[in-house]
Amino acid sequence: MSEWWRDAVIYQIYPRSYQDSTGDGVGDLAGITRRLPHVAELGADCIWLSPIFQSPQADMGYDVSDYLAVDPLFGTLEDFDRLILTAHDLGLKVITDQVLSHTSDQHAWFKASRKDRTNDFADWYVWADPLPDGSPPTNWHSHFGGPAWEFDPQRGQYYLHNFLASQPDLNFHNPAVQDAILETAKFWLDRGLDGFRLDTVNYYVHDKQLRSNPPAQTRPQVMATDLYGMQDNIYNKTRPENVAFLERLRALTDQYDDIMMVGEVGEMGRRSIEIMGEYTKGSDRLHMAYSFAMLGPDFTAEHFRDCIEGFQQGAPDGHPYWSFSNHDVPRHVSRWEEYATSHDAMARMTCAMLMAFEGTIGIYQGEELGQLETVMEYHELTDPPAIRFWPGVKGRDGCRTPMVWEADAPNAGFTDGVPWLPVKPPQISRAVDQQGEGSILAFYKDAIAFRKASPALRHGATEFLNLPEPLLAFRRGTDEALTCVFNLSPEPMTLTVEVNARMTGAAAATLEGGVLSLPGNGFAYLEEAGALSLRTA
Image 1 (cartoon, helix red, strand yellow):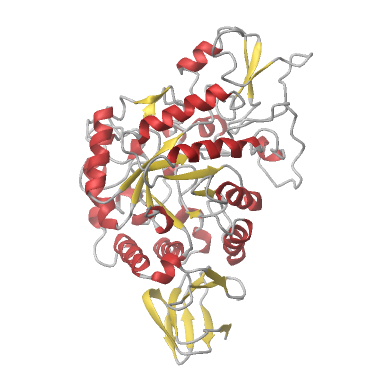
Image 2 (cartoon, rainbow, N blue to C red; image 1 turned 120 degrees about the vertical axis):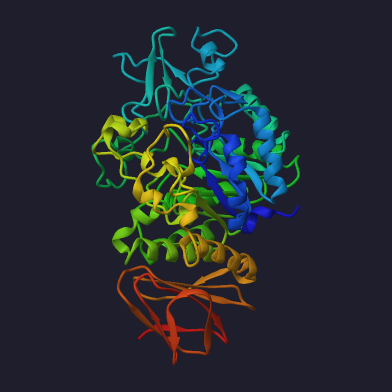
């Protein structure tokens, strides 16, 4: 096996927002296929498609009503097959989102399950009787607000939903459910898919005893809408039995040639890094995992070092996947703008930083343009939690607005119709056809090419240097080592380089007379002529 994924750059595509080919205002598979050369020219190795399966779209496809069908909104199975063939011809692998912890309430399995308590599907979902006072079986919260239980009068029971009430959780304690899910995975692998991104991978199994969660051990300052964060969520997810199902899934993928699975660990903080390690250790679980640890507001050298070293210590034989943006969080150039001298400076530095991390790298569509979070108005929203909790929660629409291709075309070339989310001037100004020499897109192409040409960045181990905030510095590799230095603040910083060294690759710094000068958001890759040492000047 080539294990192509170990040093890959994976480009996430949000199908609704990439390219519309029909004029209905929603992106589709044919549109993605048309734009695949952009991804190949960027230098990425693989595309990850957010859900394309049949769905009522209550949660934009993360509510699947048929695992074996493409939603007509996106096209047909034949369109999917053409996309796979085109991608492979361009040297791109393809993985898709698999939403396995829950389905839509419109799925045939759930429709059968809710009929009564004795049919063949009765135990395929998590059902429980009310407590004597009629209240839900546990105190668990839904991510989208309110209890994680919905009462169904037809069965006279509650069912579990970690997200919308229309997204009931499957019962993975039932072997028949696991078997059925594995069959759906096999269906897509047989069509030539190269792997899966597993949504909410630590949510598959719930506590069979239905014990209530204790209060959070540390009470973060959360908004009133974030009831979920006020509990220590130990019984509604990340149960020990979860690993056994991951081993079954890995056994299936090992029957195919060089398949990869990356799991989304739905957790924040140090615990998320621990789960990443647990789920990727050895060779019979996930190939790699990522968490929300780098997808939040934290932007300090200590934080990034803790994430990487925490994974190294927790899973020395595991493999991480690092990214700064995706479809669930504000775009990082906007999210971290208080630390930036400019949006473009932040875009360049974070690209250089991400490409220097050990592991697999993820890029979210538009990130290569330095794209900003779109400012939304209430009447423009489609995201359920944003609609429910506005204005306290801004939601996920701002990072999901359409890809911009040609600045002077209607809707920046995304659609001839009315786009499902607005295309606004700040985003249009960063269209692909505006990204010439010296642009953020050109920088991304160069940075990816530099990573691919560097044995140290592709395969080298990471050793951190002890420097004060806001400086992040680490050495990658041994024989052909690179020292990577980043100034995570808008203020200039100066370092003394105590051995001979020279800068290589892209840089926003100067090195003269043994002094490395880093402007705000400056960075440098240093080739060593000996054991390079840095100290603050």
